[in-house]
Length: 225
Image (cartoon, helix red, strand yellow):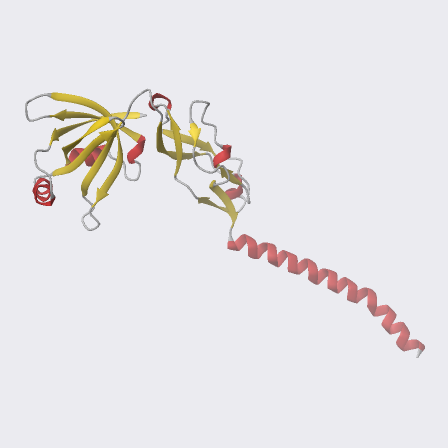
């Protein structure tokens, strides 16, 4: 997992009023907590936080917090972003929760999926559909991957790649249902119409052949009468 550094400071005041004033100054109210860890109310720089967080992939980055107290003492804590609240209008972060990481305790995170290769099914007229962008995994922090690559070159029309098809190693456990599809190649409407037209032409040819074979018998009956 990628690790980035982020400066933080202990908050002396809490509540909606102090939080608004912090945001107006370019800071984001935050909370740091963890297993058997005393929670701390802190603040981080908004622009630095935005650079740290990849949209929709907060948990795929470890954050080394350098927390400064008012007494000048600085402590470092390794964490992961567990919750990020964003303003729905200006899209700026409003609050963030950091969860402490312990290297000897398993951690569950969402890991981004990266596709490699070009499916043969797309070359044959199919359409690629990405059904999941992340998969949930657990393991010790040192074993967790930053992303998981999937080779989709061999996917044909009608094929799919499921969670159970992933290879992540013995140290990492998949938490999503194995039957869930991550990506699939499906037939397009054009290909379906083409197949339908081909089927109709075959049926018409069969009907024509039956009519042709029946015609002599009809003519023979008419001549006998």
